[in-house]
Image (spheres, rainbow, N blue to C red):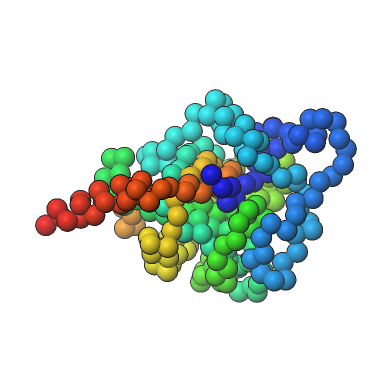
Length: 262
């Protein structure tokens, strides 16, 4: 498994798991090295959390399973702050605010499962969003996040800033996080807009299987939308590299189901 994204802030703050250097009584401040360059002008000197290796991420995973009983993201009626697990093919991009300029500062992971998956009555989308500072691998820098998405962009980074200040609980009403209130319809419309353009521009053949744990920001399931959409902030995302035979077994049943559809 390869770690694609890890939020040290969630591990050290929300879960209370300390890095090895702190546990051993070392006082030195460790810097995160330049693991990825989304933009050539990006500076990573401001990041100060020690890197969480595979062993620490595994410890965080065990802690989540033991303390919070995470549910699959396909579970109905998810609540803000609820822990979910995910395992599906996803696209990865980095973007910046709609009217802003590079470097990209928001990392997005987008995927979708069809109706019928885990009993879903209709298609279900998943969008994970966080800071590019937590990325461990190169991603595709796509520039603007999209029209009318400034509030959503700022919300994503505000969640990150709160975690940096030790505020790890997300309010039930996301408007409480922001200085300017936004109607629920416009918030949902922005989320669907971003999820939609990434879905269109990154077809299934370009995606890889990703899995991990995340905290729910929104579960949008109103009849007015074509499909349901879950928006969450990830603790970690890891890539699963499957042998060709296993990948074919996962793909072929979908093809057979489509072939039987009249």
